[in-house]
Length: 210
Image (cartoon, one colour):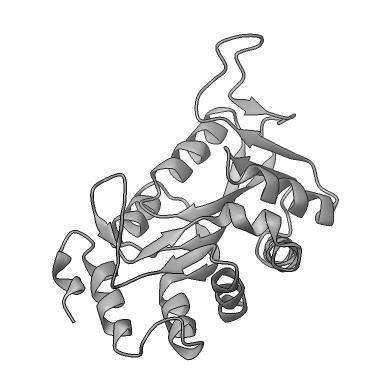
């Protein structure tokens, strides 16, 4: 599944590798990878693959799940489609509570003690995902884990998830993506080591040297 998803994401440029012309993240870090999983929604074949894969992971890893909760905003559509496939209830968690109406942060019915799986599109440092899980726990949910479409596998993110006792299962990941990108000629073979150096230490720009 990891290689199939990686190939699909590369084919629609939902994940884009550019080691010679790096992107600049909001943090200022120069990165050879850019991820925009929103493009999945406009590519029906890839969308079907991703949503069926999310549903399959829920069935296999969390068969006792009762509700899917998407992260706002990128995870909402994926949670909705996967929940439809599974015939399950679905809701989502806002980045912050509304400042009007009922001041909800969690949208959709959620009963205390319900077993929840969070659907996320991308895991990087893990901060936003952990924030969603904590909001659900505060509301009384039993959060079983997170299913994400893609993870960078950053050390910081892995450590933060472990410290918060959050289990993440991604459909694909950076290492697999780089392997597939080389096989499919999206990048040159000698770029593989450079890309892996970047992920080992994103703040060290020496990876940009060939």
